[in-house]
Length: 519
Image 1 (cartoon, helix red, strand yellow):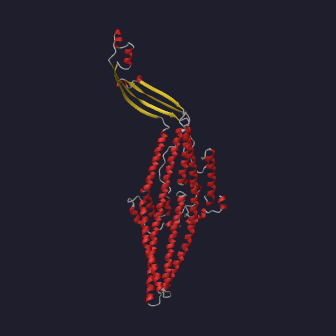
Image 2 (cartoon, rainbow, N blue to C red; image 1 turned 90 degrees about the horizontal axis):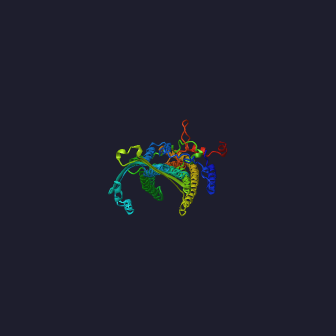
Image 3 (cartoon, rainbow, N blue to C red; image 1 turned 135 degrees about the vertical axis):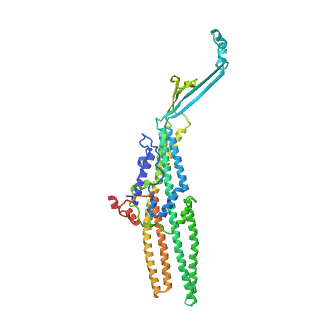
């Protein structure tokens, strides 16, 4: 079970081990947590395509809001940022296929015809003339050379080229490309997570603005009644003009807040339209109401596994880029060693197209070359030094990603706990203020209480409701922050008893040290 006070210890130890590995020149990868390297056994290269780009855990459905679900689904369908991230994944997949193809033999089919037509008194014929072996020299033997040579040769065959990957240069280059592909896949998941979190946050903001505008309208009505009552008391000579002016200022302030709320609402709705891809699903914005997601204090998944940080897409991307840097370094080192290349061609040749398939007309050409780098001005060793620096950078970035994830989880847990406690207090205050308003309304209706006391209690009740609504919004933001910190859904809700509330979730995450160590 992941606890805030244990996360830092685990991560610090892992990062220390990783740093020692980098500085000593050894393999850093076995020392870092959550490492699963593609093709680590080096016997085979896993170049299978990713199953897809969809998150199997739609964590936003835990808010139990059908409208929110429709909005998120529409955003995932038409958001431009996600379309860009998908295109980058496809580019990385193509690069991985290109790098993998370098390990395979290259075979090309050939079909050609070569025609030769030249006079015999040039080239070799001219040299024979100089040696006294011209056309007249063969007349004594009863034959003569033709004036021209004319020949056409037809051929069909296959050309083959292959470089033997003795030192694993191409294999490591392919593994590096595969790791880069998986890193871009993780980048897509990070972009998807960010877009969904931004969508949910904007949705909650719009819902909260609708609610706050409603509370502001109620406050304006109550203050208007206050002003009317104060003016009536002043006209009857039993009130103070200063009370009238003060209440008018309060009413003007409350009325002035309404345009500001409308402006903020228009801005939030505009941002949601951008997330929805512009006009494609813009009609969804008009379906939003002042109903906050029902699960603000309701079902939440139980527990957080210790591997939670591994599912964060930014950690996964940094991990894969670390693997890519390692394989890239091995490929650069292999380039310092000799390489063996094989090439050849095989097929059929004939001066007559009708004899193409005559087995006696076959031909072959085979060649091999062993090349060893001797002097290239330090280019190859410079590439190795560059790869070593890139590996050190990738290791540092991975450590930073894990440390950042740890800090964000700790902060998200603390924010969730504090907002649970705050909302409990606001809820209690709102209930008491509502009960007081109902009591004063009954007293006024029965003639026991006065209207001013009733208005004051009503205004306090509206203010308490608005504060509670803001507390519910903040708790929703805090829960959203925990989803983001843990990379989405931290566990699935098991079938059976009703899942615990958010408050219970916080209590479960803050296990006593004795119980956590015993487990």
